[in-house]
Length: 278
Ligand code: GUN
Image (cartoon, rainbow, N blue to C red; front, side):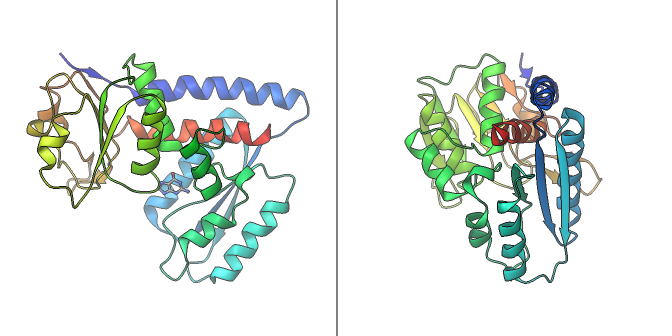
């Protein structure tokens, strides 16, 4: 029998905690404010941004949305961020990714002041994570560690395999699991013999961006599998990188899509906003 890891429920608990912390801070006269920058009208980004704003409203964090046109110049975007860096009324700044191709994403990430970097993407925060110093943790990997802990899944000494090496998920995920004393392997698109590697995992984190790629023959009996992927199928339904129907027969724990990792990313963002105000 496998257990569904209910990200929606765990995220709701975390948001309640954040809500009371925000209320406590408000009573001391401290308002928390998140600035979200969206460049262009990418429909998926619009959904993510709306969900982040809804979460802010729920927990009692102010949010300001700065919508900028698709053809905005890099200089203008950097100037907007710089203005927000100096605005004492703004605690956290989030630039929704991806950005249009004419804008250098790395430059934009570096432009956000590390103390307002609630995404945890700035090289200073990445470096802090790398050497175990306190800093903003990237929301998706931090949310995954919470999911594992809330579900009572031990990481210490466990064989952890991550499929995907992005700066947003794969790499910080590896560092966080290492910090929890996991034995960590990162596999990626050039990895040979992927199946043999993923089958070693007690904890398998899949962030490869390929719909339904991981089937039962990629997983070990009794493993915990976390699916970071999200895709819209032709029939309109959502699915992950993991073939839920086949994998659930073999594992002990599995996250659904939707309702697994996604809500946790937003809950961790709310936590980071509180931390940014302190
Ligand atoms: N695009 C996809 N995921 C994220 C995220 O966590 N933060 C930002 N800023 N953009 C994203």
